[in-house]
Length: 418
Ligand SMILES: Cc1ncc(COP(=O)(O)O)c(C=O)c1O
Image 1 (tube, rainbow, N blue to C red):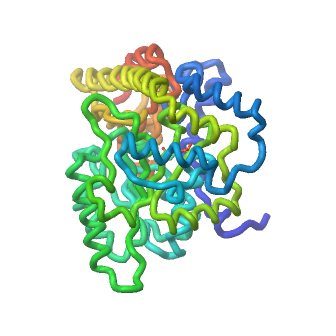
Image 2 (image 1 turned 60 degrees about the horizontal axis):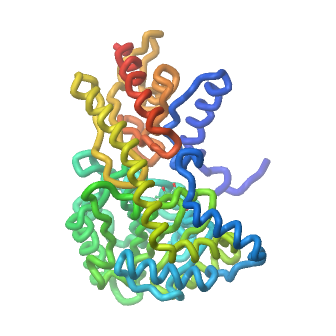
Image 3 (image 1 turned 30 degrees about the vertical axis):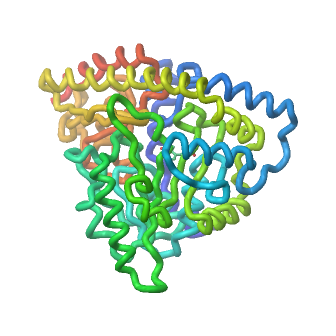
Protein backbone atom coordinates (compact mmCIF):
# COMPACT_ATOMS: atom_id res chain seq x y z
CA UNK A 1 0.00 0.00 0.00
CA UNK A 2 1.30 3.42 -0.86
CA UNK A 3 -0.30 6.37 0.86
CA UNK A 4 0.82 9.98 1.26
CA UNK A 5 3.41 10.96 3.83
CA UNK A 6 0.63 12.80 5.66
CA UNK A 7 -1.53 9.68 5.82
CA UNK A 8 1.40 7.51 6.77
CA UNK A 9 2.39 9.70 9.69
CA UNK A 10 -1.09 10.26 11.14
CA UNK A 11 -1.17 9.44 14.82
CA UNK A 12 -3.95 7.19 16.09
CA UNK A 13 -6.05 8.40 18.95
CA UNK A 14 -5.11 7.05 22.37
CA UNK A 15 -8.74 7.50 23.41
CA UNK A 16 -9.84 5.09 20.68
CA UNK A 17 -7.30 2.54 21.97
CA UNK A 18 -8.77 2.84 25.44
CA UNK A 19 -12.25 2.52 23.89
CA UNK A 20 -11.13 -0.77 22.29
CA UNK A 21 -10.05 -2.11 25.68
CA UNK A 22 -13.38 -1.10 27.23
CA UNK A 23 -15.33 -2.76 24.41
CA UNK A 24 -13.38 -5.99 24.90
CA UNK A 25 -14.32 -6.07 28.57
CA UNK A 26 -17.94 -5.16 27.80
CA UNK A 27 -18.10 -8.08 25.35
CA UNK A 28 -17.15 -10.31 28.27
CA UNK A 29 -20.13 -8.94 30.20
CA UNK A 30 -18.22 -6.51 32.45
CA UNK A 31 -19.86 -3.22 33.40
CA UNK A 32 -17.39 -0.35 32.99
CA UNK A 33 -17.86 3.23 34.21
CA UNK A 34 -16.70 4.84 30.99
CA UNK A 35 -15.40 8.31 31.80
CA UNK A 36 -13.34 8.52 28.61
CA UNK A 37 -15.60 10.05 26.00
CA UNK A 38 -16.06 13.79 25.53
CA UNK A 39 -19.62 13.01 24.54
CA UNK A 40 -23.04 12.51 26.11
CA UNK A 41 -25.20 9.48 26.62
CA UNK A 42 -28.49 10.77 25.12
CA UNK A 43 -30.47 8.66 27.59
CA UNK A 44 -28.90 10.68 30.41
CA UNK A 45 -28.29 14.00 28.64
CA UNK A 46 -30.81 14.46 25.80
CA UNK A 47 -30.75 17.52 23.53
CA UNK A 48 -33.30 20.30 24.23
CA UNK A 49 -36.81 19.24 23.22
CA UNK A 50 -37.36 22.46 21.25
CA UNK A 51 -34.23 21.79 19.22
CA UNK A 52 -35.29 18.21 18.53
CA UNK A 53 -38.77 19.25 17.36
CA UNK A 54 -37.25 22.08 15.32
CA UNK A 55 -35.07 19.58 13.43
CA UNK A 56 -38.02 17.29 12.71
CA UNK A 57 -40.15 20.27 11.61
CA UNK A 58 -37.37 21.50 9.31
CA UNK A 59 -37.25 18.12 7.56
CA UNK A 60 -41.06 18.20 7.22
CA UNK A 61 -40.62 21.63 5.62
CA UNK A 62 -38.19 20.02 3.14
CA UNK A 63 -35.02 21.84 4.14
CA UNK A 64 -33.02 19.15 2.40
CA UNK A 65 -31.00 20.96 -0.29
CA UNK A 66 -27.53 22.50 -0.08
CA UNK A 67 -27.30 25.26 2.51
CA UNK A 68 -25.34 28.42 1.59
CA UNK A 69 -21.57 27.85 1.97
CA UNK A 70 -21.34 30.12 5.00
CA UNK A 71 -24.52 28.91 6.69
CA UNK A 72 -28.19 29.83 6.33
CA UNK A 73 -28.69 33.57 6.77
CA UNK A 74 -31.21 33.36 9.59
CA UNK A 75 -28.81 31.22 11.63
CA UNK A 76 -25.95 33.66 11.15
CA UNK A 77 -28.29 36.53 12.04
CA UNK A 78 -29.42 34.79 15.20
CA UNK A 79 -25.86 33.86 16.17
CA UNK A 80 -24.95 37.53 15.75
CA UNK A 81 -27.75 38.51 18.17
CA UNK A 82 -26.79 35.67 20.56
CA UNK A 83 -23.18 36.89 20.63
CA UNK A 84 -24.35 40.42 21.37
CA UNK A 85 -26.77 39.42 24.11
CA UNK A 86 -24.76 36.69 25.84
CA UNK A 87 -21.19 37.81 25.30
CA UNK A 88 -21.44 41.55 24.45
CA UNK A 89 -19.57 40.79 21.23
CA UNK A 90 -20.26 42.62 17.95
CA UNK A 91 -19.99 40.40 14.88
CA UNK A 92 -22.15 40.82 11.79
CA UNK A 93 -23.25 37.93 9.59
CA UNK A 94 -20.27 38.34 7.25
CA UNK A 95 -17.94 37.67 10.14
CA UNK A 96 -19.68 34.41 11.10
CA UNK A 97 -19.20 31.02 9.44
CA UNK A 98 -21.31 27.94 10.15
CA UNK A 99 -20.05 24.38 9.58
CA UNK A 100 -20.76 20.76 10.45
CA UNK A 101 -19.59 21.09 14.06
CA UNK A 102 -16.64 23.03 15.31
CA UNK A 103 -13.89 20.62 14.18
CA UNK A 104 -13.94 21.66 10.50
CA UNK A 105 -13.79 25.28 11.65
CA UNK A 106 -10.68 24.69 13.75
CA UNK A 107 -9.06 22.92 10.82
CA UNK A 108 -10.12 25.73 8.46
CA UNK A 109 -8.60 28.30 10.83
CA UNK A 110 -5.29 26.43 10.64
CA UNK A 111 -5.47 26.13 6.85
CA UNK A 112 -6.45 29.78 6.35
CA UNK A 113 -3.62 31.14 8.49
CA UNK A 114 -0.78 28.66 8.75
CA UNK A 115 1.75 27.88 6.02
CA UNK A 116 3.76 24.66 6.26
CA UNK A 117 6.58 25.23 8.72
CA UNK A 118 4.85 28.16 10.50
CA UNK A 119 5.00 28.11 14.28
CA UNK A 120 1.77 27.24 16.09
CA UNK A 121 1.95 27.54 19.86
CA UNK A 122 -0.46 25.58 22.05
CA UNK A 123 -0.52 24.55 25.69
CA UNK A 124 -0.48 20.94 26.83
CA UNK A 125 -2.59 19.22 27.85
CA UNK A 126 -5.04 20.42 25.19
CA UNK A 127 -7.38 18.87 22.70
CA UNK A 128 -6.22 17.87 19.21
CA UNK A 129 -3.88 20.78 18.43
CA UNK A 130 -1.11 18.25 17.78
CA UNK A 131 -3.30 16.65 15.10
CA UNK A 132 -4.27 19.97 13.46
CA UNK A 133 -0.57 20.95 13.39
CA UNK A 134 0.22 17.69 11.68
CA UNK A 135 -2.55 18.10 9.11
CA UNK A 136 -1.53 21.66 8.27
CA UNK A 137 2.23 21.00 8.25
CA UNK A 138 2.69 23.48 11.08
CA UNK A 139 5.70 23.52 13.33
CA UNK A 140 3.74 22.78 16.51
CA UNK A 141 5.21 24.18 19.72
CA UNK A 142 3.58 22.43 22.69
CA UNK A 143 3.97 24.42 25.90
CA UNK A 144 3.57 22.36 29.09
CA UNK A 145 1.40 23.83 31.83
CA UNK A 146 1.27 22.94 35.51
CA UNK A 147 -1.20 21.73 38.11
CA UNK A 148 -0.38 24.82 40.22
CA UNK A 149 -1.98 26.95 37.47
CA UNK A 150 -4.91 24.55 36.98
CA UNK A 151 -3.19 23.45 33.74
CA UNK A 152 -4.08 26.77 32.12
CA UNK A 153 -1.19 28.44 30.29
CA UNK A 154 0.19 31.64 31.81
CA UNK A 155 1.79 34.59 30.03
CA UNK A 156 5.11 33.47 31.53
CA UNK A 157 4.67 29.98 30.05
CA UNK A 158 3.91 31.37 26.58
CA UNK A 159 6.22 34.41 26.41
CA UNK A 160 9.39 32.56 25.30
CA UNK A 161 7.58 30.93 22.36
CA UNK A 162 5.59 33.68 20.63
CA UNK A 163 8.35 35.39 18.63
CA UNK A 164 7.65 34.68 14.96
CA UNK A 165 4.66 32.42 15.67
CA UNK A 166 1.62 32.56 13.37
CA UNK A 167 -1.01 31.11 15.67
CA UNK A 168 -1.62 30.71 19.38
CA UNK A 169 -4.36 28.12 20.04
CA UNK A 170 -6.21 28.55 23.34
CA UNK A 171 -9.35 27.03 24.83
CA UNK A 172 -11.42 27.89 27.93
CA UNK A 173 -13.11 26.10 29.66
CA UNK A 174 -10.42 23.62 28.72
CA UNK A 175 -10.73 20.11 27.39
CA UNK A 176 -9.28 17.97 29.08
CA UNK A 177 -9.09 19.71 32.47
CA UNK A 178 -12.44 21.44 33.06
CA UNK A 179 -10.47 24.47 34.29
CA UNK A 180 -10.68 28.04 33.02
CA UNK A 181 -8.75 31.24 32.44
CA UNK A 182 -8.99 33.88 35.13
CA UNK A 183 -9.61 37.42 33.93
CA UNK A 184 -6.10 38.55 34.86
CA UNK A 185 -4.49 35.44 33.37
CA UNK A 186 -6.15 35.92 29.99
CA UNK A 187 -5.53 39.69 30.01
CA UNK A 188 -1.81 39.11 30.42
CA UNK A 189 -1.79 36.69 27.47
CA UNK A 190 -3.77 39.14 25.29
CA UNK A 191 -1.22 41.83 26.15
CA UNK A 192 1.57 39.52 24.99
CA UNK A 193 -0.18 38.96 21.65
CA UNK A 194 -0.80 42.70 21.20
CA UNK A 195 2.82 43.47 22.07
CA UNK A 196 4.14 40.78 19.72
CA UNK A 197 2.06 42.19 16.84
CA UNK A 198 3.26 45.73 17.54
CA UNK A 199 6.82 44.49 17.19
CA UNK A 200 6.26 42.72 13.85
CA UNK A 201 7.73 44.40 10.80
CA UNK A 202 5.49 45.67 7.96
CA UNK A 203 4.66 42.76 5.66
CA UNK A 204 5.38 40.18 8.35
CA UNK A 205 2.49 37.82 9.19
CA UNK A 206 0.78 38.73 12.44
CA UNK A 207 0.26 36.44 15.40
CA UNK A 208 -3.36 35.22 15.46
CA UNK A 209 -5.25 33.80 18.40
CA UNK A 210 -7.60 30.85 17.94
CA UNK A 211 -9.98 30.97 20.89
CA UNK A 212 -12.06 27.84 21.32
CA UNK A 213 -14.98 28.56 23.66
CA UNK A 214 -17.14 25.57 22.79
CA UNK A 215 -17.76 24.96 26.53
CA UNK A 216 -18.32 28.62 27.46
CA UNK A 217 -21.96 28.20 28.56
CA UNK A 218 -21.03 25.28 30.82
CA UNK A 219 -19.50 27.06 33.83
CA UNK A 220 -20.11 26.20 37.46
CA UNK A 221 -20.54 28.20 40.67
CA UNK A 222 -18.84 31.60 40.58
CA UNK A 223 -16.60 30.69 37.68
CA UNK A 224 -17.05 33.17 34.86
CA UNK A 225 -16.10 32.73 31.23
CA UNK A 226 -13.70 35.34 29.85
CA UNK A 227 -12.73 35.90 26.25
CA UNK A 228 -10.08 38.10 24.66
CA UNK A 229 -12.12 40.69 22.75
CA UNK A 230 -14.07 42.13 25.68
CA UNK A 231 -10.92 42.21 27.78
CA UNK A 232 -8.76 43.84 25.10
CA UNK A 233 -10.84 45.24 22.18
CA UNK A 234 -7.70 46.12 20.20
CA UNK A 235 -6.99 42.39 19.78
CA UNK A 236 -10.22 41.85 17.77
CA UNK A 237 -8.58 41.78 14.32
CA UNK A 238 -6.38 38.87 15.42
CA UNK A 239 -8.91 36.57 17.12
CA UNK A 240 -10.83 33.71 15.52
CA UNK A 241 -13.44 32.26 17.87
CA UNK A 242 -14.72 28.69 17.75
CA UNK A 243 -18.13 27.85 19.17
CA UNK A 244 -21.26 25.80 18.52
CA UNK A 245 -24.02 23.67 19.99
CA UNK A 246 -22.17 20.36 20.38
CA UNK A 247 -21.32 20.63 24.05
CA UNK A 248 -23.52 23.31 25.62
CA UNK A 249 -26.71 21.66 24.34
CA UNK A 250 -25.43 18.05 24.46
CA UNK A 251 -25.82 18.03 20.67
CA UNK A 252 -22.58 16.41 19.52
CA UNK A 253 -24.31 14.40 16.79
CA UNK A 254 -26.39 17.29 15.48
CA UNK A 255 -23.32 18.96 13.89
CA UNK A 256 -23.75 22.71 14.06
CA UNK A 257 -20.70 24.82 14.87
CA UNK A 258 -19.68 28.37 14.14
CA UNK A 259 -16.55 30.46 13.94
CA UNK A 260 -16.42 34.24 14.05
CA UNK A 261 -13.63 36.68 13.47
CA UNK A 262 -12.21 39.13 10.91
CA UNK A 263 -14.32 39.06 7.74
CA UNK A 264 -11.39 38.44 5.41
CA UNK A 265 -10.22 35.36 7.31
CA UNK A 266 -13.75 34.02 7.79
CA UNK A 267 -14.27 34.42 4.02
CA UNK A 268 -11.17 32.33 3.28
CA UNK A 269 -12.27 29.69 5.77
CA UNK A 270 -15.65 29.57 4.00
CA UNK A 271 -13.92 28.96 0.65
CA UNK A 272 -11.73 26.20 2.12
CA UNK A 273 -14.66 24.43 3.77
CA UNK A 274 -16.81 24.94 0.67
CA UNK A 275 -14.38 22.76 -1.27
CA UNK A 276 -14.37 20.19 1.51
CA UNK A 277 -18.17 20.29 1.74
CA UNK A 278 -18.16 20.45 5.52
CA UNK A 279 -21.53 22.19 5.78
CA UNK A 280 -23.84 21.66 8.64
CA UNK A 281 -27.04 19.90 7.47
CA UNK A 282 -29.58 22.54 6.43
CA UNK A 283 -32.46 21.29 8.59
CA UNK A 284 -30.22 21.34 11.68
CA UNK A 285 -29.18 24.90 10.85
CA UNK A 286 -32.78 26.06 10.49
CA UNK A 287 -33.68 24.40 13.81
CA UNK A 288 -30.68 25.86 15.62
CA UNK A 289 -31.56 29.33 14.32
CA UNK A 290 -35.02 28.99 15.84
CA UNK A 291 -33.79 27.46 19.09
CA UNK A 292 -31.34 30.33 19.71
CA UNK A 293 -34.31 32.70 19.87
CA UNK A 294 -36.29 30.50 22.31
CA UNK A 295 -34.62 32.21 25.23
CA UNK A 296 -36.80 30.87 28.03
CA UNK A 297 -36.52 27.25 26.92
CA UNK A 298 -32.82 27.63 26.22
CA UNK A 299 -32.12 29.07 29.66
CA UNK A 300 -34.24 26.47 31.41
CA UNK A 301 -32.44 23.69 29.57
CA UNK A 302 -29.01 25.14 30.34
CA UNK A 303 -29.87 25.56 34.00
CA UNK A 304 -30.92 21.96 34.51
CA UNK A 305 -28.19 20.54 32.23
CA UNK A 306 -25.50 22.39 34.16
CA UNK A 307 -26.94 21.28 37.50
CA UNK A 308 -26.92 17.67 36.35
CA UNK A 309 -23.32 17.92 35.12
CA UNK A 310 -22.21 19.71 38.25
CA UNK A 311 -23.73 17.09 40.55
CA UNK A 312 -21.76 14.38 38.74
CA UNK A 313 -18.53 16.39 38.68
CA UNK A 314 -18.87 17.33 42.36
CA UNK A 315 -19.60 13.73 43.37
CA UNK A 316 -16.47 12.54 41.60
CA UNK A 317 -14.38 15.41 42.93
CA UNK A 318 -15.51 14.81 46.50
CA UNK A 319 -14.96 11.07 46.16
CA UNK A 320 -11.39 11.60 44.98
CA UNK A 321 -10.67 14.20 47.69
CA UNK A 322 -12.02 11.78 50.30
CA UNK A 323 -9.56 9.14 49.08
CA UNK A 324 -6.80 11.77 49.27
CA UNK A 325 -7.74 12.54 52.87
CA UNK A 326 -7.49 8.81 53.62
CA UNK A 327 -3.87 8.84 52.44
CA UNK A 328 -4.25 7.61 48.86
CA UNK A 329 -1.93 9.28 46.33
CA UNK A 330 -4.71 10.89 44.39
CA UNK A 331 -5.74 14.49 43.86
CA UNK A 332 -8.15 16.59 41.85
CA UNK A 333 -8.86 20.18 40.85
CA UNK A 334 -12.25 21.66 41.67
CA UNK A 335 -14.60 21.50 38.65
CA UNK A 336 -14.96 24.91 37.01
CA UNK A 337 -16.46 24.34 33.54
CA UNK A 338 -17.05 21.91 30.65
CA UNK A 339 -17.81 18.24 31.37
CA UNK A 340 -14.44 17.19 32.72
CA UNK A 341 -12.67 16.67 36.00
CA UNK A 342 -8.92 16.60 36.36
CA UNK A 343 -7.82 13.66 38.50
CA UNK A 344 -4.35 12.70 39.70
CA UNK A 345 -3.64 9.02 40.29
CA UNK A 346 -0.01 8.94 41.27
CA UNK A 347 0.69 5.21 41.12
CA UNK A 348 3.34 4.74 38.45
CA UNK A 349 6.21 2.68 39.83
CA UNK A 350 3.78 0.52 41.84
CA UNK A 351 3.26 -3.20 41.30
CA UNK A 352 -0.04 -5.04 40.89
CA UNK A 353 -1.05 -8.15 42.84
CA UNK A 354 -0.11 -10.11 39.69
CA UNK A 355 3.41 -8.67 39.82
CA UNK A 356 3.07 -6.25 36.90
CA UNK A 357 4.93 -2.97 37.21
CA UNK A 358 2.86 0.10 36.27
CA UNK A 359 5.42 2.05 34.26
CA UNK A 360 3.35 4.81 32.66
CA UNK A 361 0.09 6.67 33.19
CA UNK A 362 -1.38 4.50 30.42
CA UNK A 363 -0.47 1.40 32.49
CA UNK A 364 -2.22 2.92 35.52
CA UNK A 365 -5.24 3.65 33.36
CA UNK A 366 -5.46 0.11 31.98
CA UNK A 367 -5.03 -1.25 35.51
CA UNK A 368 -8.00 0.86 36.70
CA UNK A 369 -10.08 -0.33 33.74
CA UNK A 370 -9.41 -3.98 34.56
CA UNK A 371 -9.43 -3.80 38.34
CA UNK A 372 -11.82 -0.94 39.23
CA UNK A 373 -13.93 -1.10 36.05
CA UNK A 374 -13.44 2.61 35.57
CA UNK A 375 -11.84 4.27 32.57
CA UNK A 376 -10.19 7.71 32.47
CA UNK A 377 -7.96 9.21 29.76
CA UNK A 378 -4.35 9.98 30.69
CA UNK A 379 -3.13 13.49 29.83
CA UNK A 380 -0.59 11.82 27.54
CA UNK A 381 -3.52 11.58 25.06
CA UNK A 382 -3.59 15.38 25.09
CA UNK A 383 0.06 16.03 24.33
CA UNK A 384 1.49 15.73 27.87
CA UNK A 385 4.34 13.35 28.75
CA UNK A 386 3.55 9.72 29.61
CA UNK A 387 5.08 10.29 33.04
CA UNK A 388 2.39 12.80 33.98
CA UNK A 389 0.02 11.10 36.40
CA UNK A 390 -3.00 13.26 35.67
CA UNK A 391 -6.13 12.03 33.91
CA UNK A 392 -9.29 13.40 32.34
CA UNK A 393 -12.61 12.13 33.68
CA UNK A 394 -15.63 13.01 31.51
CA UNK A 395 -19.04 12.75 33.11
CA UNK A 396 -21.12 12.98 29.90
CA UNK A 397 -21.45 9.22 29.43
CA UNK A 398 -22.32 8.20 33.01
CA UNK A 399 -25.15 8.67 35.46
CA UNK A 400 -24.61 10.12 38.92
CA UNK A 401 -25.31 6.67 40.37
CA UNK A 402 -22.55 5.14 38.18
CA UNK A 403 -20.12 7.75 39.44
CA UNK A 404 -21.06 7.26 43.08
CA UNK A 405 -20.64 3.50 42.72
CA UNK A 406 -17.26 3.90 41.08
CA UNK A 407 -15.27 5.62 43.83
CA UNK A 408 -15.17 2.61 46.22
CA UNK A 409 -13.96 0.45 43.29
CA UNK A 410 -11.07 2.84 42.67
CA UNK A 411 -10.21 2.67 46.35
CA UNK A 412 -10.23 -1.13 46.38
CA UNK A 413 -8.05 -1.27 43.25
CA UNK A 414 -5.50 1.18 44.65
CA UNK A 415 -5.34 -0.75 47.94
CA UNK A 416 -4.08 -3.78 46.02
CA UNK A 417 -1.02 -1.96 44.66
CA UNK A 418 2.33 -2.08 46.42
C1 LIG B 1 -12.25 21.99 22.92
C2 LIG B 1 -13.06 21.34 21.85
N1 LIG B 1 -13.25 21.99 20.70
C3 LIG B 1 -13.96 21.42 19.70
C4 LIG B 1 -14.49 20.16 19.83
C5 LIG B 1 -15.24 19.55 18.66
O1 LIG B 1 -16.56 19.85 18.70
P1 LIG B 1 -17.56 19.41 17.51
O2 LIG B 1 -18.20 18.16 17.96
O3 LIG B 1 -18.51 20.57 17.42
O4 LIG B 1 -16.78 19.24 16.28
C6 LIG B 1 -14.29 19.45 20.99
C7 LIG B 1 -14.81 18.07 21.10
O5 LIG B 1 -14.46 17.28 21.91
C8 LIG B 1 -13.58 20.06 22.03
O6 LIG B 1 -13.38 19.42 23.18
